[in-house]
Image 1 (cartoon, rainbow, N blue to C red):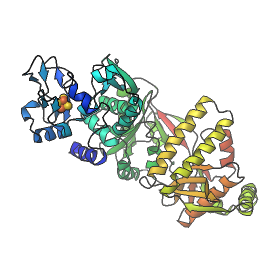
Image 2: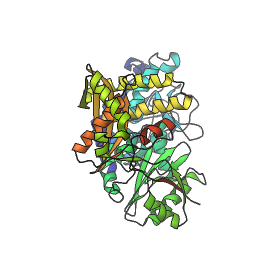
Image 3: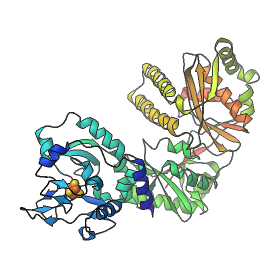
Length: 495
Ligand code: SF4
């Protein structure tokens, strides 16, 4: 059933055929394609279940497929010479008899998906057995590979390949590697470790929200929200599975799997955490990467009692919404002065984010990041900025879908600041990200106050401003807003 859904999504979201690199005129002259030296050649095209149905509808016999659920096609003897042919191929005309319905495996050619020699990474390359490519590799090969890669990276396509892992061929040293495909590698690697793992996609938001109902309270950490994790899924594969009515979320770092959240469900925590660590032990071996992050104080005590080891990390800053909306009294003197200065000297317009703001926000992010890089960032800092840009881009594109609300600040029509946040509970609003033009003194403080005021009008009693990422400057700025609490946050490991 799952696969039917996936494949109907696939046809709805992908072009009917992948773009072609080799002109048809060259294919008609070719004497290599669709012909094979042995009956059981490993290069026989692979058809998915849906592709088999389409091929059969075009006249290929069902007997050509060892399994209707997906298989390589059975070849037939070449009636006009040596070797074997794909049964859909007409040697008299050099044409594919099912061209419009030929499988993705054939559409990709002369590109090919394969594992590297160590069977660890999925690669995209071009096949040097193709006579057209051997004569002269087109100058458009890199752009073509990029286009194909972006089509292959679409969720439905990834899931189709995951359901048909034989679409990834074995390593061939006459396939010239163009690039690695890390998303596909991660998906197939996860399947290898446990077939129950599913990639976290936007469609999982309601399921995630149901699981969270077990732990949410006004003092919950900001990490107990879908958007908090989802925006990073382009950079770090996230997986989920359900077992014994409990939801397990895993993130896959280059070192292995870890849990960015507690198991969520009705099962006793000591039991579900034990189950989670047993899974991570199977997948990661004895690596210390196996851990549960963002464990809150009550759950930490429960886990400590049954022998887990807990280490504290920086917690979220929690504020009273009315205090931040008013910024009254001496203790907020400096923040209030900065807001007043913006009101006095600038005509800043605050508006809800809308889709047409995407380009302006990205341009602001680039200006903001360039300025940061000018401040002697080390290479790690630069990587973080690049990663954050990908996450912000996902927020701009999918904010509605994942429950994020955004606000932009404009000066003379140009976007000079933006912020996005979400409701952790009906009383707690979390500020997930904020970018402001630093050349406008007080703008960040002004936007933050306006965000808190808007949240308060919609019922917020608390503002959660996330943690300080262990940055001294950020810690100082967050403490200056007088949090009512810095929420405990623990990392749990097995002793
Ligand atoms: S399906 Fe068509 S393109 Fe693919 S191998 Fe058979 S004849 Fe060739």
